[in-house]
Length: 427
Image 1 (cartoon, one colour):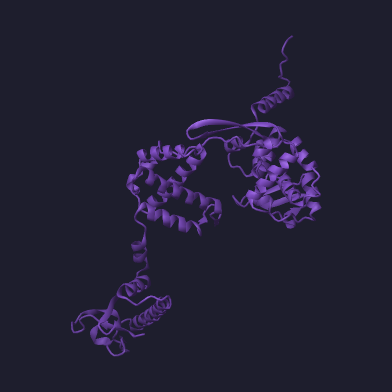
Image 2 (cartoon, rainbow, N blue to C red):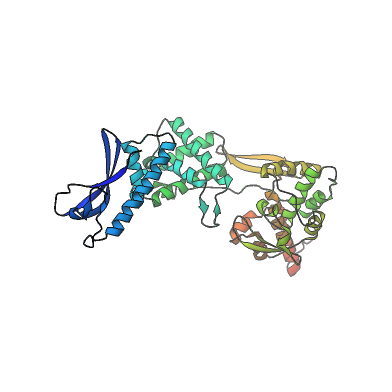
């Protein structure tokens, strides 16, 4: 490898002259790059490529140290380039010096400019991005949601034979995008999630000064959703689940036990599947919720205590959420949790209602809903339940409850009976 040198541009002129980085790639090709430093030519040592050691030369030590470090860093970067099998070209050397001397300028040059470039950058950064609210990395499911959205955007371009960029994201695009997703049979909530992802990406691009089209901020450009008909298990059904003899099937037994822990603590799957003995103090469970980082204290129900004692305080290792849900449906079927449930969703732009047996809809999240719904039915204050579930607003908590109209009517009847205001119908 040839030597790095420095030289002054037009050294015979009397004013301060710029110092250039120099490297001869081959006999006929020389690369030069301005360092941004200047020195009076009479203080420059052209043989040593440094400022002369004289008191009259201002900042001689600082300049020489700067040139020494730049030379060392440049050599390291050049060796890395060669080790990767790449050649030293003017373009590669310029990139090296840009990165060493002007990292901000390089960042601006490499900043994505088109919508697709920005989405690609957004997806790549999401893999290591930290959620500022929780201080934790973005979850796998969220990243997968981003990629699903990016694929739908490509399908849109193929369907409408167009090339999307920031300036084409308007209300016409919004309506066409929704129509395409509806034609693919996607649910209203799933379409709403895609719109929410798009708005998050556009907001980020706008904040970075890359996007200037603000039509996505129109009130009509909204990410909609509808309440899902999720189920919960009442106390009788939870007891039926607990009563199944699974001694010959440890796989299902462990899933059943973990689910019941969730149903009697109100914790999410990611929390109740990772409880450790040290979290339990004096009959109470002290735990920091993974999703919100909120710290909660939960008294241990008798069933929870029995399960913890069964495993000597060390619960079974968790399995994937998907496998957990598959096994849970097997358990629900064994426990004969067969109550008919009608689930309605808007799919493909049409409202569709389907009849299920309750066990067919059981998931890990049914445990947390069961906890909240059963406690609310018992008359326990909503505010106190929220302290355990971690809900921040009563409105979101009330949407979370999955009581039927009949159950709400019975709650009102019970309230009137307790207050003495219940009126009997005259015969």
